[in-house]
Length: 379
Ligand code: AMP
Image (tube, rainbow, N blue to C red; front, side, top):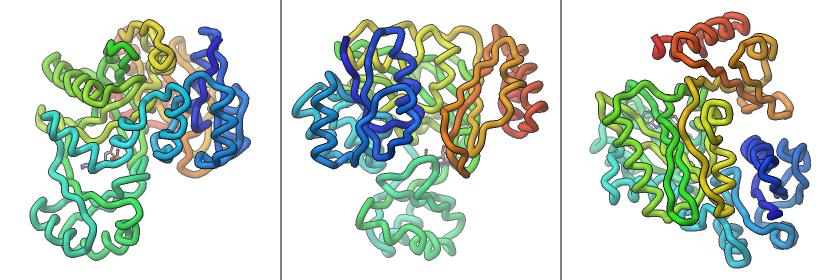
């Protein structure tokens, strides 16, 4: 039975290991800390991702390598791919790690994006703000996630403050300025591409963020067929251009019926957690099937699902566990401010039923604000 090596031992690796167990797969996780939460289900190598000895031991004990985070050092991905199959491949990783490379590729593929400009100096920032207009967002090109490494420029008077906040990182990680999109909705496509090029996408997901961090996801997103087809076509084009293998997510803003691409995540994605109970095959199992060259599973949804993220600390499990379609995921992490420690998925056969379950859970856990936009969408 093959052993899958996962770089990174967070909740994504943990859910991958859980999804791979019925397939008889074995796992080995490489992480910098011994208490990484995937280590509760899989043996670990503890070491730095660039440590040659740790990488060598990891590589010697696995048949194929994949990742649970995108900021894998490029040299480590390259080193591994010289020794064994690595999916997604280093080129896809390199593109998705850099917001500028990613947006440039979107443009080349005819996928609409907000206006953007590369920024290296304060003078360039002033010039780009004048061209793009306000409001806009200054972001680090690399190593940003969950809204970190971002500064919103509401008026030109904020330029100095934005530069003071992020300018010192211009040399190390690069900066990009993006026009602010006054979107009505945020959507994501979670999709999978096999080693043989077979492409499958789950129904579109609608997402709500709080302070740049995902708070809730609803699937299937109530959108018209034309919008769904456009989103799926963008995702397929992207996967083919990168010769992508595995699961990925494409995050989209929807403004006045138009889709603008924000970013891609070259891995299983938080907005796809609902697929564990809400679809025929979960994103985690299909990712494993893809990287191992196994037949891909059906991505159709089973009813209507809403995922609620638990950030900082786990709430009381009771109200979710008492729901007929309630599913609980505790990642086994220590509570910490801003940390994703778990999620719940509520599943129901009809939208009104899902809305009623969300209302009950929201009230019982005093999370009315978290469930309110989803209930409104289901109305
Ligand atoms: P990101 O790290 O790029 O995924 O950004 C995190 C969240 O910040 C997004 O999901 C949006 O809610 C918001 N955001 C990021 N970029 C933009 C933009 N150009 N316009 C409007 N909102 C944005």
